[in-house]
Length: 242
Image (cartoon, rainbow, N blue to C red; front, top):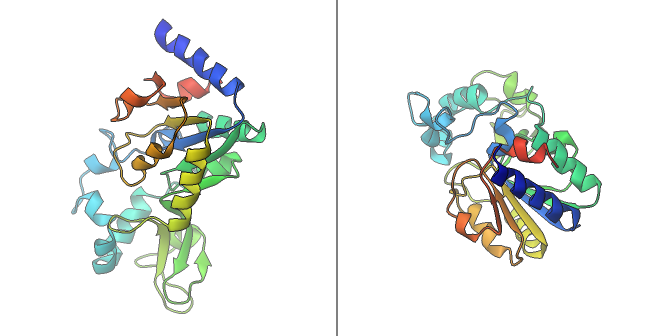
């Protein structure tokens, strides 16, 4: 770690020490350290070879027209039931317990923030841990998908759908409202592990009105110029020091 990064992490520590109204907005980089691949990294889902492009497979229209292929891909590439929370997940849970972190707004669907102990988590894109029957509404856990073959079916015969937001689907309005409220009322907004290229989620940062926007990401993002503190380093390296 170079001196400049070291200095910035100490500055980040000071910001955390002085605040009890921090909100964390995170993306795939929070979970890559737990062994869950990032969609857009060189080794991510978008760069692997399938019969169809992954972004097409996890779209609403593909789900409707080719459910069997959707679930084959979904089981194979979207479910990581044995993944453990990363350093970042654990430190965020600790900061919430200490009364410093007000909430987490995540683009991830893996449920690892809750597994780490975080309570106030807004899941913008849903969760693989929740699934429901499209016919009768009965809810199922992740095992209903993992332990089935082909298209998973409810006792009533209806198709079981993962409670995740697919391409072409809208975000849940309640979650949008909660996320905007958290971000707009935050004293400190920490954005981590996201390229900030997925909308409407990325646009929520515009609701932050404070002057302590901390951006932590290995690569550059469209919001780098707006950060009050910019740290180009792996999240685990940064949060491991907090």
